[in-house]
Length: 164
Image 1 (cartoon, rainbow, N blue to C red):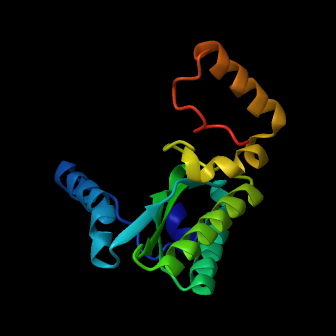
Image 2 (cartoon, rainbow, N blue to C red; image 1 turned 135 degrees about the vertical axis):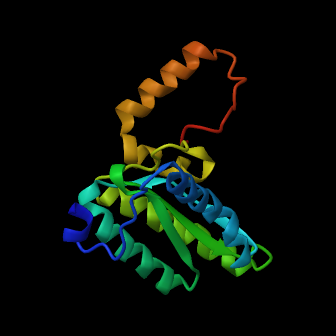
Image 3 (cartoon, helix red, strand yellow; image 1 turned 120 degrees about the vertical axis):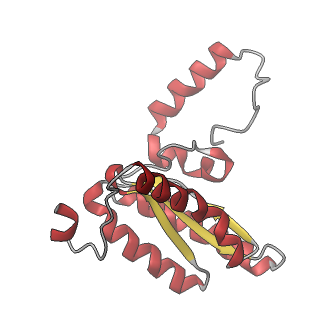
């Protein structure tokens, strides 16, 4: 009812276990099926407040239009976790440059709207430059101290996590 009242085009609720399994199969097949659209993809994981999902989708579509590469958007709307997935061909160096720009714009958008860089898949090296903006210097320093306490020889992923 809430989805329809807010303008959802289609609402599908599983009536039984068979339908539930079918819906989950469809969801799990989404990412692999994108290979038919482009040879490469960069799947991201951002979160925004649920109230900002519609604006986020609109602005991600604008980023796609501006840069000329498709973004497929799916995720977990119930908790504001979105997976904007950039489709491209890495054999074209110009496309990879656009992908990096688009990813930066996605991250900035999530933070601007009160969200986070990651909801469930972690930060990774692509998001490292945005950690200071997302977390602030105090949080970064605390995390560095925890890492140093647990890994005093810095042998676990050296140089991977914290921004310089």
